Image (cartoon, rainbow over all chains, first blue to last red; front, side, top):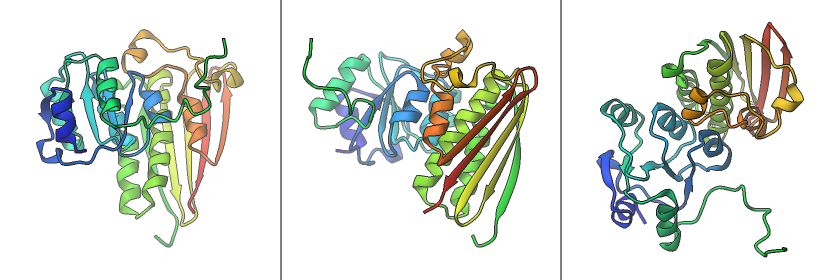
Amino acid sequence: MVLSDVQDLLRCVLFSGEEFMNRPVTYGCASDLMSDVLAFSAAGALLMTGLVNVQTVQTAHIAEINAIIFVRGKRPDKKLIAFAQGKGIPLLGTPYSMYEACGILYRAGIPSTMKCGQNVSTTNSA
Amino acid sequence: MDSPFSRSFTIQGKNFPDAGNVSTEIKTMLKELGVDPAIIRRVAIATYEAEMNVVMYADEAILIIEVTPHVITILIDDRGPGIPDVELAMQEGYSTATHEMREMGFGAGMGLANIKRNSDEFTIASTVGRGTTLKITITIN
């Protein structure tokens, strides 16, 4: 799967980075907490977030994130779009909620890159 | 890169619009030096978290990075309020962040733990009323 496939699946608006739409997408992560993105993501991941500010793009650049998808219909301003273009990070926006967007991509075969749940039991012990 | 390389940066406290620029410069510098991308990512994350801490809590800091073929050492020495209980501050989830810091996606109590996670060696020393010093060592190979 490439970024343009994700754009179709999530009915995304493309704000910037048309030249990067052939980037492969192999895993994703989602958070509004940038320290969690820094702690638990991996290089090359797709980031879904509801946080729309300069630190979202700075974090993506530092963590080698492939592209940012803003959820819940959020839109970056022109200044943020220009900043992301300078960093080579595509910005997209989906009308879906974070939960829905993650579910759609997970069902399409894009696993999570976040490593925080590895020790969590999958059975309910209650 | 055969000989040691060293560079220093100044980080201004409360300068939220420029937060992250020093870490970005360091990332670019390490790329130009031909350092392994996985190492660069660890250095960039550690310095970015440290830079955010300075911007959020301190008045000013000096960051000195030294790169040799085998090890990268980063010293961040800030002038600021210091940390009363370092052990508590190191715990994931503990935070004294303001609403403004949280709005930027930080202040969730992950910063120092993230720095340690990306370091091979990490030391922190703090004096209340004077400031905090971090030393981060990341081994190459």
